[in-house]
Length: 421
Length: 164
Picture (tube, rainbow over the protein chains, first blue to last red):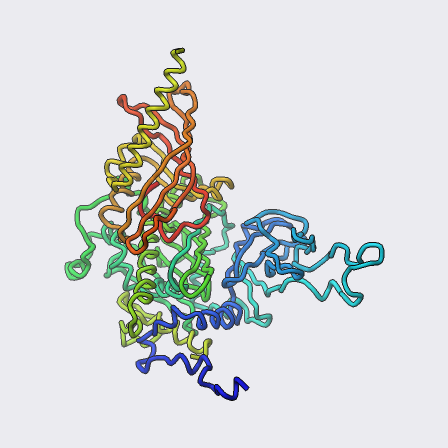
């Protein structure tokens, strides 16, 4: 009866109308609404996407596992005896307990601590204690079959040591999912050398998860917010740069090439209040760049839909995994890495340069603060949405100017299609 | 009282005084004075217990030498954008080891950092952890040759804007 009485008026597509201006105006409910968030989990994170879950270097041996997430959903990533990788929900099929509690480790099997239901390294249920009861009494029903129970197992793919999982079991290949241009940048960073894990950053961020993608599809902010980059000549508005977007609009790569600070034009300098001449670092090693990649770019930030950022900021390399926890907050897990063949000095160079990144990084802390400010603004001041109109010559897609928001518009073209909004 | 015990008490008092001043400089956000708490060759890092326990070297802050510590202070004061805040650093449970043959003093202490933002009344516990220190006397004054701030809270709330 409810359906007939209310008709379609309560349908999500009726309640949320996109502004008539099109994708140059993004309404606040995209970032603040619980119903929209739940639809994103269903249609995006649990939909037709490849979600980053781990690096193979984190689970090199049979029995190695690491806890991870697909969207907000906890999963276990484990290396089975045959060397294959399995990804399954971290939820006991008996009473829903999140049974794998350690962040990482090595086991022969996973045993739920509550009633000791036991799963193998592929996430298949193997044993149920007292299944047939005690002395002929109690136990599971006669028709209970172990093979019919177990946590949901996800499709898995890996490329160059990076592991992805999907709730869709008929996903296209990762190469097709990324498209040739984004794949090329992915392979420039993951160039075939064995990875070496250097450590993690983990933080919460009181903002909508999409703001993090947008920040890295917004080359406009880089020279304006990040005074450090400009002050010390690492990135200026005249740098050779590219904001690459794949054909679908969901992925992007912000690319730039390091330039000589002394060559900044007076015109560009005037626009950037941040620029201060004569400021220099006591220890400028943080800005050194060892050209180790087959790429014209010294910096690439790849936003791989929906939960992965691949950071190649000169020689500091990292994965950032987005774990949304609601419309207003997400967790970010950074996995910083180098390569197995790095000298001690190269590792230390990566660590020193790491001061740019993470929640205390000269760039990282500013991004986090800016995203918090955006969410604060939307929650505290009702408004008519965000204006993303820069670079009208490129309505959506790849842009060669830094002063563009065409990559954000491309992302929303894709998002709206997937969300049906 | 035995001389050695008096010496140990004086040593402890000196480190407690040092830590109180160190915290006061950070709480006042007097970061350039904070730089002088370190020796020229000092190592300073703020590292998660997760990384520390797994011998993973990545730190929220990672400084090799006072030059990098200076640059951290300078960049935070002159270039970094972050919302206004007050912080309180508290140190307790100091443990001081006997002076080593090389004149260094190893010490440990627990710390907490509270942070107050402008839009909420309560102070938030921003970080909780342990200082793992090596002190050295330089020009008569006690200075840090090494301070590893090993924090327990797996998740950093939003951003660490002032050193620990």
